[in-house]
Image 1 (tube, rainbow, N blue to C red):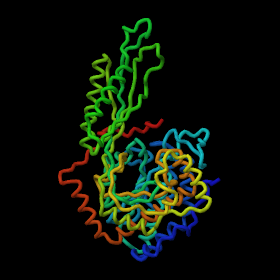
Image 2: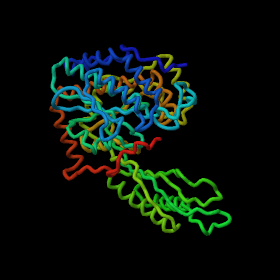
Image 3: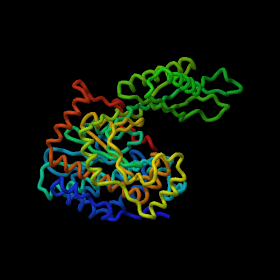
Image 4: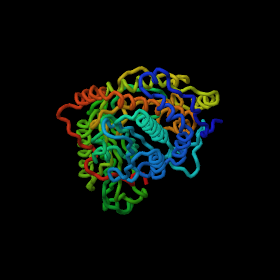
Length: 477
């Protein structure tokens, strides 16, 4: 059985000589990551063990902050009024290169680092999106660039962004709204996945809200006429929004769950609640669809003689791609290369594959870098808001067994082993090389910025889709 304490050997993922040839002092980047590889691997597993959910990542955030402080970074905490959000800066002047790191886990996905379903007792959440690797891999890159700036005596600033609650909490949106990215020239990020790919991509914009209906309780058998069912309001709303599906854009999405449907069948529910997600191609489409959902809720309340109120919970813009920036990252990812499995890791992967619903990628593909091909993801992320205020790009590395999907127990399992750690180090090296390239050749930033301005348009004004609400710090409690 593969233990999750098996860590990457520092020599396994050495930078390709081609990468060293392109950036003066690139060996410093390699040494910076190699020298701390054991520490980074252990830190990622500590955060995997903690599995703290959005806005509750107090220990995970503190561990990342301490590592950055110990490396000489200036840390600022409580960004945008969020206790677990922080920035850590090193260097002087322009350009300012941001590297984002996440660290929140997902509820209901506790899992051991084994290739069969095995929830961990007394643990409610799991890193089913690999954010324990995301945060530490980004940190490793930032520290390596810090070493490089010192060794090369270069101007410029590397800044790590500790961004909490990506999973439905829109942590980055509040940071953007507070102006935390206003002086940044380029923002970089990555994400765990089952393959290696730096293609530019967009996502769907989204907005979520909880719709609450208030009625009048009564005995459902003895006095049903005296009651007004809040659950009827929820069900009427759901019926009408489901009819909407025939009359909305094909790439739009609406999903919901009933979070409160009453307490007992023989009591007419006086309160009920339904939680909606509305997704669309861009912010404008989401706002239009959301207005229709609200109209359905109002109609449902009128028809059932109940009262309706709603609270917007979160909202994300679509990701604005930047091909010029993505091509730089793609070049660096190809120089670093993919993930090679040891025989023990390969055996773990073979066992895990048998549990997958549909393995669309074959074992062995984790070694490859996917073709550069722009695409649109049907998911949503708060990185989208960052991408509309500063040129942004991201990429994916194979931290999971090929064929594994995000938000699954299989992702938790692989992410808790050396398979996950190896993918994390591919990401760290790619980020470090990219940031150093931009700092060494700031002229490239002009091309990147020009594409950003063209795609965004001259009349764009940023407005958060979640409005002026305060961060929902208790949304996972």
